[in-house]
Length: 343
Image (cartoon, rainbow, N blue to C red; front, side, top):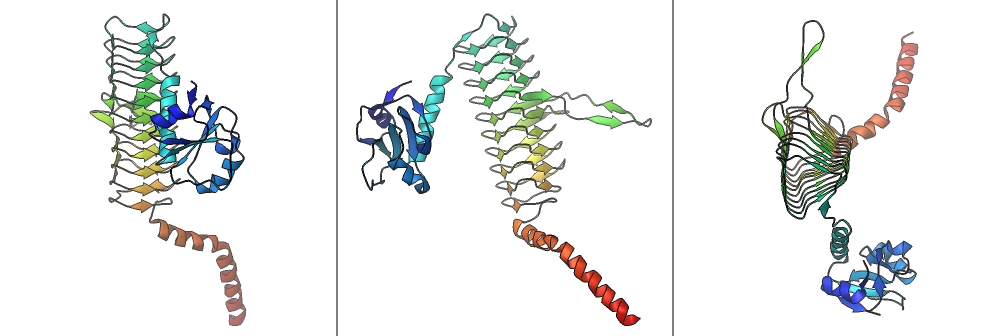
């Protein structure tokens, strides 16, 4: 897709400074700019690169003032960062705007697929599944029996959606995701073996959620495992049966939630955080990476460490922890002195 600086400025409701007819056909970092490239400058730390970049056009804030001449055309907008993000979104829509059903896709006779959908090669839509309008189902995706998918949903290659899962509108499911596999439920028997507990519930993912690559969301034992509206789950996360993740909560990679954990709304969860089962996390909670959360957490809390505690308390405790070898050495020296004195 090739656009002129003027076309981009009109789309972003901005103005141009320089050659408004220069065209761009790719995006690039300002420090790695190339002819025909479009970049942006939002962080003042990178301002030096605008004088050496070879990018053809650069999006900047409208109050940006040049200190010396440059070769690139400036596209001035109110907020360069958000404007560039909007442009990337438009670029992705153009790039991934696929339509049509491949002759190598399989759609069960009882399934329903909405208008303007794309089904890639070897995608399988099983019995009684319902796909909304303008969905993109990439190659080798499996949509199980009775699955309900809303409008404008993208499911990337190789994702597996088990039976009876419900996915809302405008969701993005990345490659390798498994939604609706059995929860980890086993009853110990007297002979030391385990009896599998049937997982009869489902998974509900509400509107505007995004699930990262290779994440797993298990179906509930009974009822539903629920990912609420606007939640963002990063790659390689494990969400166990009967878990609830609140609206607009963000969860980083390799986080694991044990069964029946409830996460509140608008939480920020760092990478590799582990949650014990059957606990409740309040709203607006922030949890640092690699923390271990063992009990209920109140609204607006900030936690770090394992077991997770207040970050300030953790750093004080860690400062003492680092001194333990020295303290032990001093304690032994003191013990030896006391022993010598007593003798």
